[in-house]
Image (cartoon, rainbow, N blue to C red; front, side, top):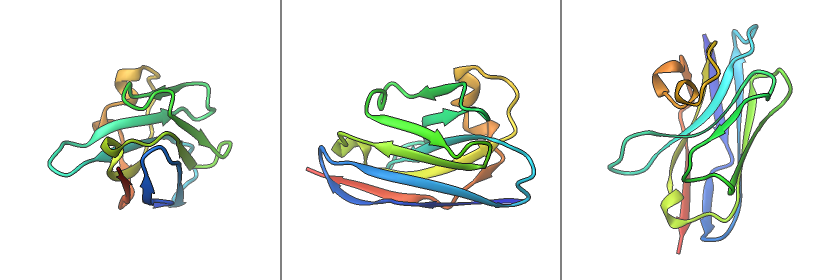
Length: 128
């Protein structure tokens, strides 16, 4: 089993920045595809960003492209999400996910069903 723990959420004003982190523990002998998803109240969980094992492939949802940067700590299953120019509509619980994914397409990385492991989530609230 792999456990994922997110940190870095909080309250920020619109236009501000936040940095999220996610660290894996447990059976981390493999290097996983790492991703961030989010879920706002009353809405379905949606894809935010994902990064391949080596960082060669990085994908972003259109809603965050240009404002968000995903990165990882080398081959470690540690992933970061730098969020800038935050908007009120970015308010959500942000989840870290890890998956042993082989395909490298956007549609694969953006599909929540591809990820076996999930964190508990961290709240991001953007005030106007």
